[in-house]
Figure (cartoon, rainbow, N blue to C red):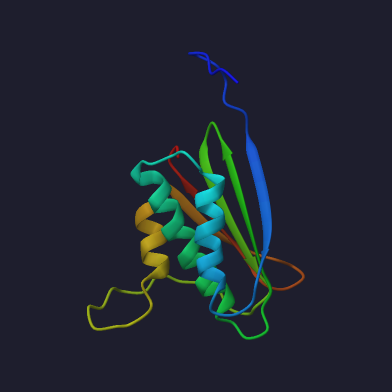
Amino acid sequence: MRAFRGAVRRAARVEFLMPQGSGAARWARRLTRSFLAGRTDGAAADAELVVSELVTNATRVADSHCRMSLRLDAGGLTVEVHDDGPGMPRAKPASESAESGRGIALVHALANRWSVEPDPRGGKTVRAVLAHC
């Protein structure tokens, strides 16, 4: 396949049901790396960090199921992580001594924008949009 200068990049979208437990974030990073294959800039590394933080937050909730979707289009990379657990993520003040609690702050720093939408059936979807990957 040849790429032509000025060619329009097509949108691509994938969705994954993540495994429960501590290995989910590792799978999220691996799947994101594969989805963004061939992109070696810092944006791909930022995307891996964002999905890792969001999936970690989602799978920490006991008995919560987690879905991750990735969409790449002209607007950049959109990451969505849905879980059926209670509670809404919030950015906390950074603490140098804390061993956790920095995930949403990292997402806020790396994403162009992010949002949380409650699901009427329970749970929520966290969406982060990153610059072109």
